[in-house]
Length: 266
Image (cartoon, rainbow, N blue to C red; front, top):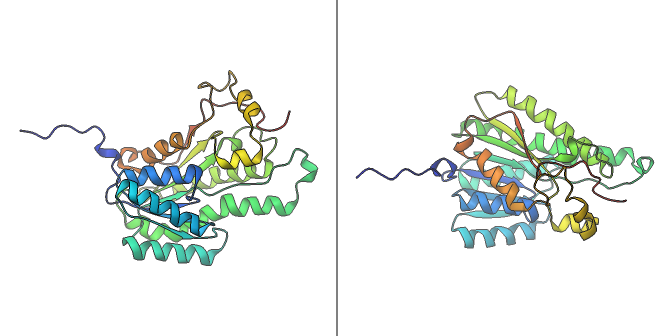
């Protein structure tokens, strides 16, 4: 009897070796868990090395697939080189890079933003993704379905009133990665997920309280709720898997339909 057709076969990540930055918690941990659950070997890199190892251990126990964690400051080239070598030593190669790490300062008054903060935001959100991509590139080119997927931000596409430095750096990431997709045509796929407001510990710490969440339930947000890490992880799985084998150079919006309301403040 013929095998039963499996509509989800192209979403399998078996045989893939994934490196994800900023994966110790929140959205990153959700992405790591989903890709691991789809069959991939996963290396979680995070500034919090202990947390990365703890998250990796928990994921490995739950999915049964190899998941490792280690410390890495993605703004330091030497840390990136060490991370990439450790990943290759552990898994034999890298087929999937997820540039997830990113953050920036919050200011209500533009005169409070310093040049140093703008530069630091660019280093963390944009340059680190470029450095990671270049360090992984030799292995991605050798892999079947080699891909780079980036965590972008809706703040790069609308006025980012409170997080100007972050939004500006993420806008640069969009441009850089679209250009990189063309430069790597027919070698490595490159895509970005434009992420809306996802409820995480980080947003809570930054002041996204219940009242602010209510304001996000705006008619311009078509789904009428803030996002969950799993919403982003599902999109990342599609873009990293063979199911998106004909997708590159794209910015995929995952933001509940979008909203132009101010995230913080009155």
